[in-house]
Length: 145
Image 1: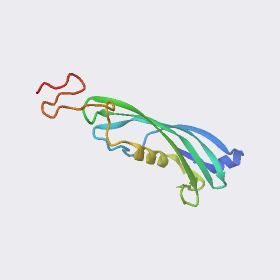
Image 2: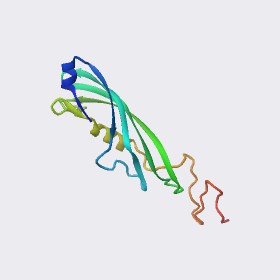
Image 3: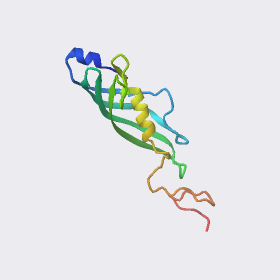
Image 4: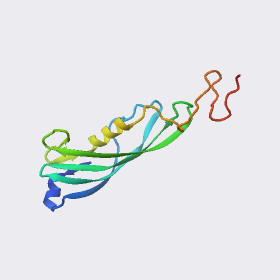
């Protein structure tokens, strides 16, 4: 998703809302046996802060499905990541602009990568599997003593 700051200036706008659905080109999570359910949804607004700079804020929402890391049952979990970032052509402490255009896909990819946990759990207090018999301790417990 590209946002052209020059077009905002030409329209006389200082702020504009956006919404887009995004399918990343690369895998963004490292959780074993899990994947993002596509598309990723991004909603937010861009506010001009100068002739060649802006502030972008919004929320990224998506689902991850896969096996629980502890008990191996199929699970699906919703994620919502809020973000706020500056973009500028000077490149200091901000995402860079290219010809007064910002590519939001880089921001979305970065936010997902740094916000993801290393495990996917069916529930926060998942008890996992018995190390001796392999029974799911969340259900009936194990059969061993």
